[in-house]
Amino acid sequence: MIEFPAEPTIETSRLTIRLVTQADLPALLEYNSDEAVTRYLPYGNWNGIDDAQEWLGRATTRLAAGEALQFVAVLRETGHVVGSCLLFHFDESSRRAEVGYLLGRKHWGAGYMFEAMKALVDFAFAQMNLRRLEAEIDPRNTSSAELLERLGFVQEGLLRQRWDLKGEVSDSGLYGLLRADWNRRTQPQP
Ligand SMILES: CC(C)(COP(=O)(O)OP(=O)(O)OC[C@H]1O[C@@H](n2cnc3c(N)ncnc32)[C@H](O)[C@@H]1OP(=O)(O)O)[C@@H](O)C(=O)NCCC(=O)NCCS
Image 1 (cartoon, rainbow, N blue to C red):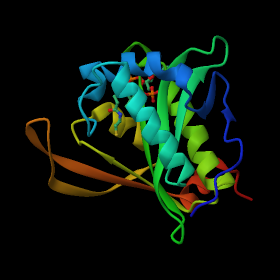
Image 2: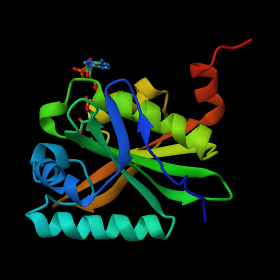
Image 3: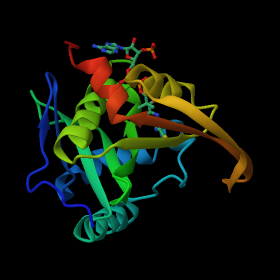
Image 4: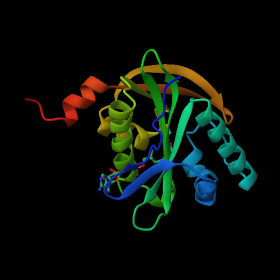
């Protein structure tokens, strides 16, 4: 099992990235009950606080089992939750994990997820000693693809008709980012 840092909280210029709590559920319910947000996610809209509560229960169980770190991104100035991001599908011996993220629709276009993910990627490589990060997206999710590419993820594959969800069959774009490439991009070379 991968060892999680005791207090995994990350500060960026505008955001605090911290583990999700009960108090975050109303904002997350608002975002996850918006079809524009969940359109390309592998689950349906949340229909009420019970769905939010059940999701938090799963996140808590996965945290205790060392399977996932579910974060929220909150504005430093106000504490307002703008979205969520996570590390999951850890493979300890290969030192890799997968990333996922979402923003409330009203927070799109402000660079918040780029800022949050840049910090989370740094955290994953530097604090958790991961070696490789992966992401899987619907290729039609262009905002997500642009975010990954801006972070330096490379599309490594396209799995055709991988999903049959929400009444439609869809492909999966597989992306990867190596710590070595991240360090080359973000650290000054001698
Ligand atoms: C994927 C998702 C998080 C991307 O949101 P986003 O706001 O476009 O992403 P970023 O935080 O990187 O912001 C980039 C945008 O902010 C703009 N921006 C404004 N200020 C900025 C700043 N200070 N820094 C960087 N970008 C900034 C950029 O120009 C860009 O706008 P553009 O898309 O019009 O070019 C969002 O579309 C979403 O939540 N989708 C639904 C959930 C989802 O599909 N998740 C992925 C599943 S795998």
